Figure 1 (cartoon, rainbow, N blue to C red):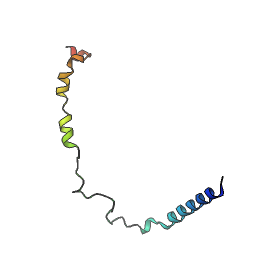
Figure 2: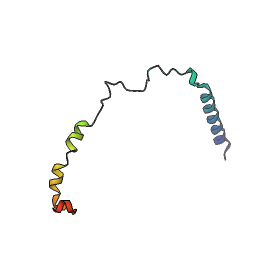
Figure 3: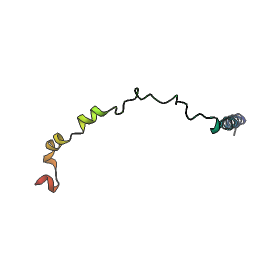
Figure 4: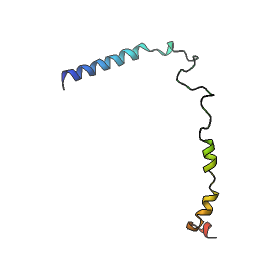
Length: 76
């Protein structure tokens, strides 16, 4: 293993250890709003609701493919 690669690895490990040690749960404010979350009005509840309404009706497909139905229900 080359010295340079190992040195960079050790420096990265030290950086991660130092940053992890600097964070404390006691210092974190859980009541503060999340800066990365979307607002309720920005995020619709069901983004694809209209497409689901359009494509969730399988009655036309059942009629279209009734000839291919090999089950006993389809033959009766």
